[in-house]
Image (cartoon, chains in turn brown, blue):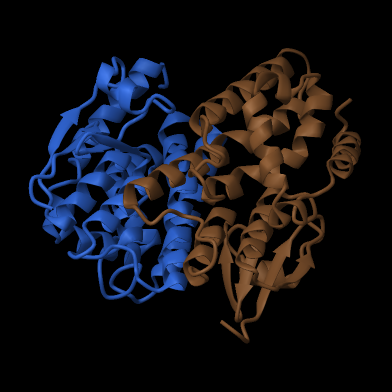
Length: 220
Length: 220
């Protein structure tokens, strides 16, 4: 759709912003990226997402869409001709939605507990994180991508977390690759796509960000 | 699709099971309802939902779909000719998904805190609950249903909570109707549909269930 105006309100390093960036890149859509300072949210963000006041928000021709997985589905439905993300079969769609929802419900919160807690709680989070990754690796199986031969919805939902692995692993003292080699192979395969490599944050910057966040929150 | 075999694993009174029942009734689909005892989950439930081990699960011709909103979308996609639940326009679809997701993220947890907590925590939950309902009432506006003229996805997501209002109100000592008269008018409008009235649990049975649950959990 020529003449479309697409704006993304996001924050560098946010897994949820990166999902939107990867999906737009897959579709070859140009957009304006507006960086939000979450400590000082813009009047625009508060206007377009008055309910949750959260990033990311996609503004398409002036109309806002909120919540990252809802945005990715919207992008897939509007620009359906290029690189479909969700499969066309209803059962396969339901399975893709199930696993993207699983990522949403499990990974962020557990990953955060690895660096934001200490002692037993940290150890439990680490164990849980590895369990979650093993479950995902089981679902991936021997397929190149979660949906099969083609990069799709579940890949978009999960891959942004990959640039946080370095931080999780450093604070948790473990290696995802040792535990889940096939999952890391999948992540490296995704990183060969320009849509992913140009959208994901620098793992070292994420690590430094977490270091500064820990200081700010008084977590030693 | 004649010859379809549809089974629902659910529990009486579960808002999430009721969503599936309402959606199937809207489509005129006959199904077998298998009541699950959550204190003693069936081998079938553990087999078809090994990840979350939760109800509801829809089993369609032997293939399981889990998570209530994903099931409702699946039902809408498979039986798309009768009573469409999601709108066809991508932007309207995204808005419907946003509000159903809002219900999922807010209502259950807050409602539970009304009867499961005491003192300040209970008062905060009550206030939050009324705030959530006012937000939903604002979104409803003067439309008969959330999507406009026709009963749809957000209505399916929210209406099962209506049979819990009696319990919330009794334990919280408030009246939703006083605070949100238009929302309660909407609920009564939905209840005029056979798909809803025959799927929703008896509010008095829900109340008695909460009384017994409070005793069991030692909450006086």
